[in-house]
Image (cartoon, rainbow, N blue to C red):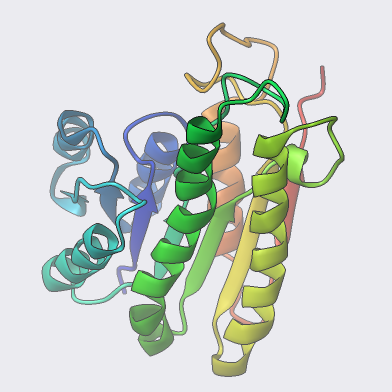
Length: 223
């Protein structure tokens, strides 16, 4: 049976590579990101197995519409990957920009909550899987890091959702990478993890036997 995965932040980096890996493994995918032209191009690359569902993860109605379109196209939703997020340009609290904080909280916290809220009714039907992009920054104290604090939320929420979803046969996994060479950074990081490494971790969690609840995959670059 073909399974379907909804990916947020699918226009590039980890999200795009996860979409490619999922399709290669026989999944169908729905691709959500704000940049409509990017998800359309990726969907064209992946063919009939992919559906572009552009939208902002900080908009609950957009996420609900994406889930509805996914189910209409593919018949069911078996997994959702809450991957979209953003960093902070002006670090710290005293020198930080409160408007930037709001945007980061909207993407990294509210966006994750909205993906879960929109997807859970369909995941419950399939005993499905919720995957969240955490971070090594959500497992350590980094001086003054507001971004890191949002990822602490993601890690805590993932554990809470694991406990909730197990009641009806669902699973929740947080994937927490260290530094990944993506457009998230202004400069290339060629000696760090690659998006396809993280995509492999996502697919590992999704491919486990239903009896195995892989709650976290933590990975770091060797250098």
